[in-house]
Image 1: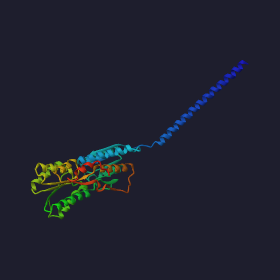
Image 2: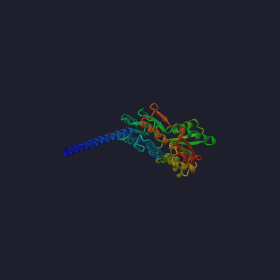
Image 3: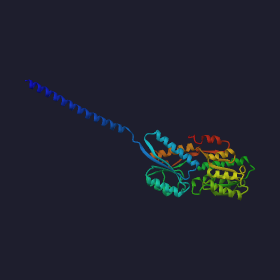
Image 4: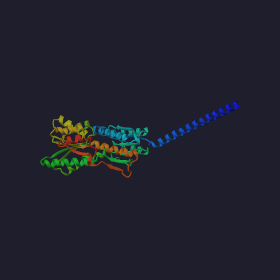
Amino acid sequence: MKRRVIGALLLTLLCGMFAGCGNSDSQTVEKEADSTKAAQVEEESTPEVKEYGVAWFCEVLNESNKLYTDSWKENLQKMDEEDDSFVFTNIDVFDANGSTETQISQIETAIASGKYDTFVINPNDTEGLVPAYEEAINAGIKVVDIGGINSDAKTVYCIGLDEDAQGMKMRDYIQSYLDANPDVVLNMCLLEGKPETTRCLPRLKYIREMAEQNPDRINLLAEAWGQWSADEATRITEDWLQAYPDLNIICCADDTMAMGVVNTVISAEKNGDILITGSNGDEGVLDFIRNGDMLATTGNYLGMMAKQYAEVTRDVTLGNWNSSVTVYSMGDAVIELVDASNVDDFAANKYTKTE
């Protein structure tokens, strides 16, 4: 009888143990299932962070171009930090140093690398770069053209600077100078950049037209291609000073060349006798204007330009660009005619003005 009781007790204990083990296993399985489900929910609720690469191909990384490409990068990085849905893994700038061959090679290498989704291209040659543009588009890369390439092989033509507006502002300024000095006759030379950089031709086009229409007030002596180079501008100016003793104004298509002109004129001790104009609003030129060694320039608000370039780059890259907009212009709000009367105000706002 005692054995039966003991046996019954043992059986009861064993059943309890097995029942306990069964509950534990069941609870473990349930917990694991809950953890898996929670992980799946968390994974589904976490948005995918898309990675993009962008590159800027610059014809010449001179002072003004470096300043606004640096600001372009900073704006893109800020946009990246403010939005968790994407990240720019590559934001690169390439300097062609004025060489079409170099720029083509840089673009081809960048295409082959597979690192980039969008190219921003400031072409050294609006004709010579057409095949490179087409190669990029055919590779699935979006192209923001800022040089007026002679091809449809681009996503959008972004006009950072309204070159016509720059040219007309300087023309009007010279006309106002003539109006204020009715006895003055301008003996003028024009210093262009490069013939292949066609988008920049309007910078001096309107001054040339004004000279042709007013031969009694403007005597157009000579024109030359300065290659966007201070050294070449120096050489040309030395020749002009020898050839044209009555020369009293030199108009330049950019400030890099204007600085070469100013330094040459100062060396010849003719500063004050020869008026000099430029375009871009580079720091060195602003100092020349303050000192009275240079008359004026069409300055660019680089902070405003860089922000808009970055916004276009971001929207094109993310697929948010309105495809019906094939030409985007910043207008003339980014351009300021700068002379001694407003040079300090312009310098104070050149990088900080964004609207």
